[in-house]
Image (cartoon, rainbow, N blue to C red):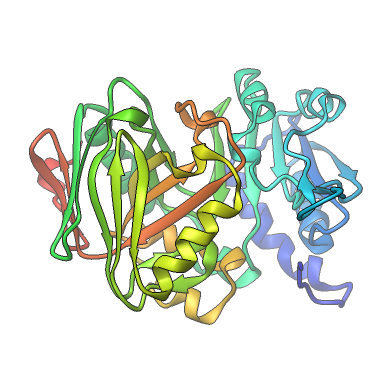
Length: 351
């Protein structure tokens, strides 16, 4: 469910915020901006984005679809329509910038449609957070600089290792795969970003991950909207979770992974860390995960590890399932050197 004020004046209040965001996205006179929506998108965001684009001299239009995110099934839960229709992709490809406010295609980041748009040079900005979060975590020079310095360090890495006082010890190979950055705006052709955000990640060689992942009290099961209350121990072999041990939190994670009905749901997707000092660990206690997930991933010095889909970020897991886990008090090693220790980046080891 998408919540938004009923007042028709809300878009007027949002216009300055969206104008500054699109300015960061290098929108200029003569550009073409397409606002991509569906029946459940926030209409005030759409109006503000259109107004901001016009204010900056761009040609602006909105492409709105019915809510096509689910289809009835003879048995079981409704199935999601995973791919954006080709006719829609063809229209979006005409844009300089796509402002993605859609709700139906929740894995657009991992879709072939997005890869096609980015290869065409289209910039894509995802906007799904609350107004409060858009303003409080508005992109800054510091977040971008720290994210890009972290990217340079991770890009050069070959062997990655994650440890924690709680018992985590996982090793994996990065290979030559690229690092994806998010700092809240897109100002170069072919770049995707989400406003707000401040983190980076890479898809390791899937079969290379081996070891034990221990979620400690206070760590986050992002898509379950839950803080871990007792240790959860995940055994990982050949890149796949083979066992989840613990109490109620472990049971919920097991059920969540099994609910996808796909083996690739258990395989490692990506790993990285957060770079925004303004993001708060208590965010998920105050808001639902649909709104607080971006903040949870952005928390400075966290470590995030995910399982499932990674097709669009350099991996090969072409699947709908995706599970983000966000952890505190970890050490992240790149080729034997710690770049992050107990929620603090070791800047001497960054790029």
